Length: 146
Picture: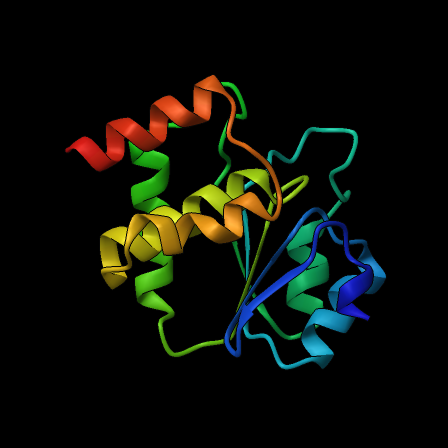
């Protein structure tokens, strides 16, 4: 069940976010009809799967890895994420990182920048997960000020 994935949030019928899924949960993601898995976490962490790309592809989905350093997220990272979301705007997309913190902020910014959402509406889903720390708050302000 997708609801068992750490910090899972079903945002709408085509977009879900979460923390790191297990290999068995990747099969559940595919069985639920997702086409794309976007991973914003790093591969070399304790929580990472040994071969997430292989597991996602074996389940019949497309894997996109955009590694975002927790302590150094950049506008360029966000732009790569937005480009991936734009390229798959008709697909069902499952986006994850370690704990759904990076993802929640990137999805909120995507919704503001690309979909025209109001800031308060976009960040309501972030508040379900966490209160961005100083590093992430600075990224948010930098991106929204430009």
